[in-house]
Image 1 (cartoon, rainbow over the protein chains, first blue to last red):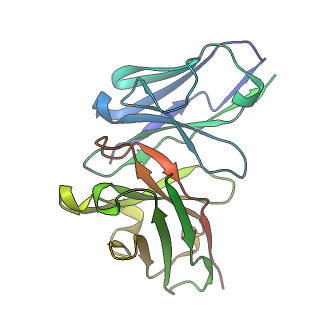
Image 2: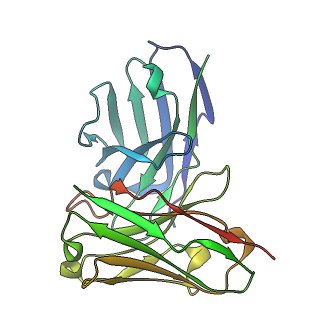
Image 3: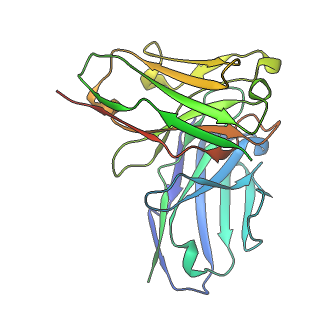
Length: 108
Length: 122
């Protein structure tokens, strides 16, 4: 089972700043099978990025994903007030899936 | 519009069984992969298991903590996904979400239900 480790655990930033979130896998993950989700309190998660770099339907272009192999990154170019939330990476595909433990982006 | 509605959660004793359901609409049930994800109170997301689309073979996969205890199945006639949970443990407590994937991505989850709470406690 692939273990995903996200860093940092918490990111304290101000609106307008750039956020860079990391996701490291215990073994190589196909770029086709790496996704990022946003979750706000009391809500179901929302898919932001799939296939490491493809934005899901309706996701603003300030969200971007990159990476390959064991290292992946979610970047939010300029934080909007509604972007303060918890973010998870996920690997999926034809075997068992796993999520990272999450990164909380909080208002500084 | 894709809609997923979970039901069947509740309080169950350790060692007991429970079946939760996910009523699906707005898409062709047999054409999508469907996944169960859970979240313990105040904790992160945990992938539980998934069932492939019928056209891809309908194979199921399970996370290690639930393998041998949980079973995922689907009923095309009613467009309903099920999660049968046996030998429940306290650590199985949480909100259980069903989700469907972006077509042909093998599990990028873009539609989610609102979740159903399962509490395992004596």
